[in-house]
Length: 179
Image (cartoon, rainbow, N blue to C red; front, side):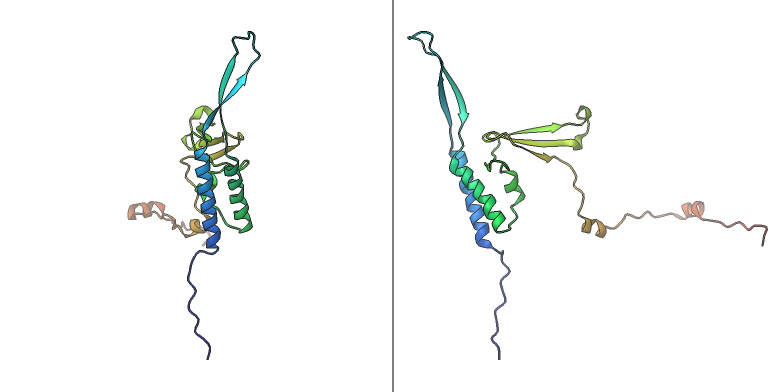
């Protein structure tokens, strides 16, 4: 007699990779939020020894570790052949792997490039990375077409014809003189 094997649990395959991706994303987000705006002082040529012109410009630094973690997220997902969640993909820059946080590391603008902006379904959300200048474009409020398999299963709406309409639409045959 053979041993009875317990049924396999229906869990998530490669759960350890999903956990790792989640941790990497949380760490990258945390490090990105911890970066502060620092003042960089640019000194100009002094016209007078007593008066130096100091220009202060605010620039945002990005944590190199946060960028490295973003790169690791991409590498782990490719190596393990995992599909990243849509929200996670949308919140990462494709070119520099920075975490895109609106108002901090990214700017969001809604564009409508239709003639005069008349088409409301042509609205596009443009997310621009402040670090590299890369742009991501997402349609806003556009009704997406159903997948092909689901389109086949949706019943076609049928119209009912009343008796009076049936009389108007009925085909009558007229006898010809050749019979």
